[in-house]
Length: 94
Image (tube, rainbow, N blue to C red; front, side, top):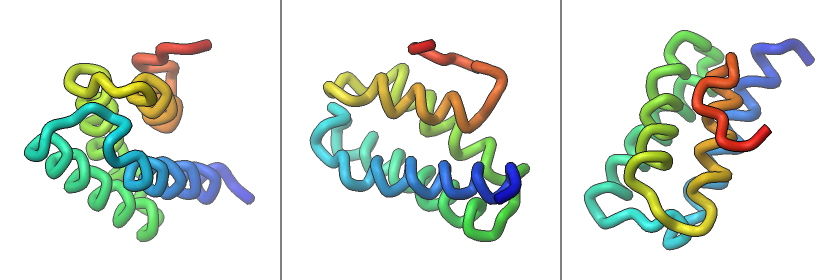
């Protein structure tokens, strides 16, 4: 597999994990809804294999997870989003 396919699969995997993590992220109703909007955009871009369109929603996801979420797995999900964006931007764990 090439890098673009691997990255698209990472985005889809993160999106699935975020949907499954309902209640473990510590987000209020409106914040959770906003997260799911970004998840849908990221998933669409990954499915369309559009790497430039993936960055903005994944960065928004990471922002919500770092700045707003306070659930037990939020930091791990934020780290996964940072790895997808690349360049160790905002990585919490090394």
